[in-house]
Image (cartoon, rainbow, N blue to C red; front, side, top):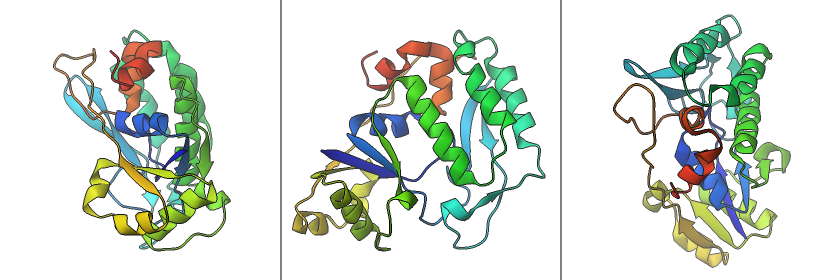
Length: 227
């Protein structure tokens, strides 16, 4: 059984969902340190002027865990993002496929970034048609703080024998520890597809919503590299 683990991100890019699809189960690692100015509270969409951020404002304190980071409710981020989605994707062929998703996301009250990310990732997984079960790390119990030992413990918690790592893991993972625990490590191989977008020249590394808006039910096939 193959397990993959990753921090919950906001409207993640294609590679994130490719990783979920490649695993037999996927754990959303919400109880590790929040990383400012990365992907946990923002992602990119394509516009006529290039790409732009969709950012969820947070009130972050040093060394807080992801599931401790509170969303700044004094900023009208939902209204701004709703307008950005309408302005840039209203003419997309499959705009209606995500209309309810965003209406629910932008009308709900979210207390913290972890709650928002976990729920939106789950919904996008369902919309894409990915069947991999998702689990939340903080609901599974306590795990070691050392990054490798934590991943090993999560893998063993589910009785999995293979851990699917991102390609960047080759540079920092202590693979001997996994071997000592009889865990096989494989690395994700994701080739970013080129697909039809609005506004001219193709831009990679957008949020997965860009793919869904433009390709609808074909999105998972494209994501898998079977376009």
